[in-house]
Amino acid sequence: MFKPTKSKLSIFFLVLTFLPLIVMRLVVYPITFQALKDEIIKNLEGSVRKQSELITKWMEERTADAQRIANNPMVLLVMQSVAGNAEHADLLKNLETIKYFDYLWKEYGSKEAFIADRDGIIRIASRKELVGANISAKDYFRSSIKGVFFTSNIIPSDVPIENESGMLEAGVPTMLVSAPIKDGSNSVVGMVTLRIDVSEINTMMQNIHIGKTGETYLINGYGYMLTESKFVEDLKGQHRITKRSALELKVANPLTNVATKGVSECLKGSEGFDADGYSDYRGVNVIGFWRWMPDYGWGVIAEIDVNEGYGKLYELRDYILFTFGLVAVGVIIVAFFLGKKISAPIHSITEAAKKIAGGSYHVRAHY
Image 1 (cartoon, rainbow, N blue to C red):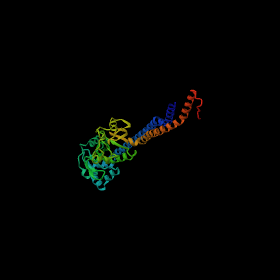
Image 2: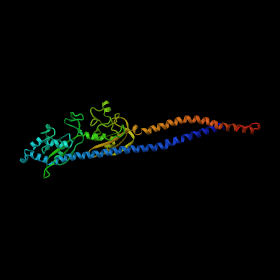
Image 3: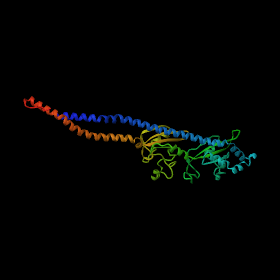
Image 4: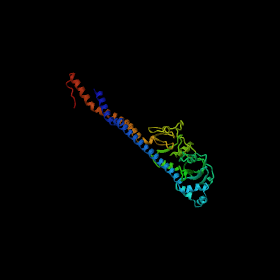
């Protein structure tokens, strides 16, 4: 009788103590964890959508810049003077004197600009050494001369241009936007090409902050990063890139060299997320959201380390488990002594009753 009573009391105290912790771990914790997952994905989705909108607006503005220059009446007069129009024979010379075109394309913030005639010969350029060059074989010229606006992908420059340090360097990420120049009869008489400062895209990507480890970046159709990684210094230290992550870093798991889940899904043209985590280009487990931009052949990806995203909940989970263990030891000790204290008088009365039942009437039960 004594041992069963003590055991039942011990079990009762254990259940009474652990019930709130069990409810927290099996009910409250999963609900909270799911709510946090949804909130993180919502934030990542918001970042991706915002970046996509900013990039689209920025690209439309750059195309509009090229169109405005192409529609400038002075540009048409220059093309007519180049074509031998006697009325405007001295126009090009005078424009060189007043530096009109230097002002024109600097107003739009382009890194470089040039105007070519129908034969693909550059007549005016922000860099004088380009004047006279033949660009008739270039894809941007062939598109523009057909009357079509052209926007290139972000590609390595084939000529030395100013890099992020202000030095001339070939292979710097660049982009070209061109527009046809048309006369009054809507005939194409030349084309304007602007070399865009793609560092502005990089600035847009880095202006959105998603915690300490969160970042948004742009990829091309080959899975290469087009903007600068937040961890560029670490990548240089690992000898995975030389100068910059843009166009150098393939966004792949460093252990398998296979494109990360975010990239592979994005390249399928889909929009989605992974809230459970996958290995990123650093080999770190991350939560990600991705979106493909078919108009430009780019993908926008936002990621944050799992440890940062779910860190507080992981701490809560570990705290609950630690509390389980700590309380278990304390409750077992307390239940043992408390159960003994409560069951001892019951045991004493039971023994006295047994003796009285056996005929020992001199026995007394002490209350």
